[in-house]
Each structure stands twice: as C-alpha cells, then as structure tokens.
Length: 117
Image 1 (cartoon, rainbow, N blue to C red):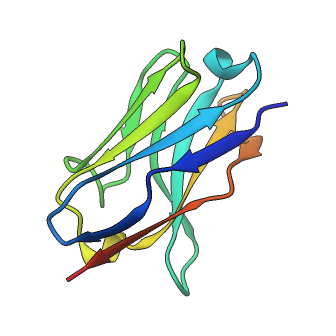
Image 2 (cartoon, rainbow, N blue to C red):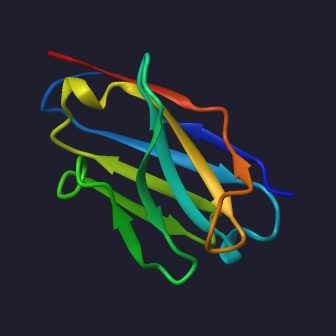
C-alpha cells in the first residue's frame, strides 16, 4: 500500500513558478513509476509528467520545456517544478504511483494550482 500526499499548490501570477511535492508512505516508492496529472474545471483529467523507477522522464506537449519532474527516493518524494505558468495551467494537480508500466495504482488527494492573468 502506498499513500500519497501532495503539497505546494497555491495562487500565482502568470509567468511565475511553483514547486509541487508528493510525499509517499510505504516501502515501495523506489519501485514505483510516478506521475503527475491535472484536472481543470469542466475538463477531463490529463497527463502532465511521468518519471520512471529508473529516472526516465516524459512530459505532455503542453508543459514540455516549462515543467520538470524529479524524484528523491531517499525521501520518498516526487516533485513537479512548474515555471512560466499560464492561466491554462490552473487545475487540481494529482500525484500517482504505479508498480507496473501500464497504469497507476495509487492516487493522492490533489492540490489546487491557480494561475492569474
């Protein structure tokens, strides 16, 4: 079992930065692929970024070059550094953990990010 707790969300002006953190409990963190997703009001949940257990990273086209995902296995934490934020980045951001390569088994409760224009 893995429990995920996100933090770091808030209100920021366009062009600003935020760093989200996701702390994982349990002993399996290092074996998990980790992902960030977001859901904007009235929209479906969408993929943002992923970091594999080996450290390979993947990004959606909408955030590539602006967001950076990283992980600290010793701390059991995954991060999402978000730079050059845009109003369209406004959403609830969710952290997810997966023990296989095809889906995610565990989800956090989400943290709100609001970007004002």
